[in-house]
Image (cartoon, rainbow, N blue to C red):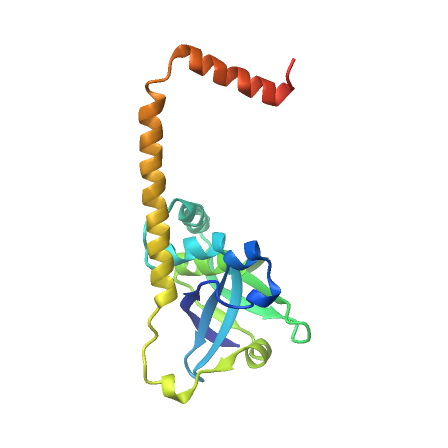
Length: 205
């Protein structure tokens, strides 16, 4: 079993030939780096996992990160410790399994979850990530010698953070604009809104 770190988050640029446009646009890859042998391994995640992971890696505020912070707090309050994230799987078909291991005293607990969720919990709790040797040997790649003395740019991570922050700012501005407009609505307009809700819930009468 080898320890790895999250090196970058790669935006949609792989496997476009086999994906629908919707799947492709929302499919990111986590680049895991095993430093001793200088190998990399990619694990696919949805954009909904990639965004909070990026913000967590830089310890930035993000509403979708809050559930992971709550989970981490609950684990600590229950006198449990997050020991690590473990990636295993089927060498033949490439199906991966990600588990988070917890400890309470002498007891150990393991729970399966999505890779992105596990990586966020690992980052929040500052615990290690491991990949079993067989999976790493089969699905990782050696980083060419010409790159070995160069630092990774983390371009994917920085770009995702930038786009996420822009989305948050745009949403906040839209919400402020909506609140201003809502404050000028008449009682009759709100009554009409209530009627539309009732028609939707119960069907028009």
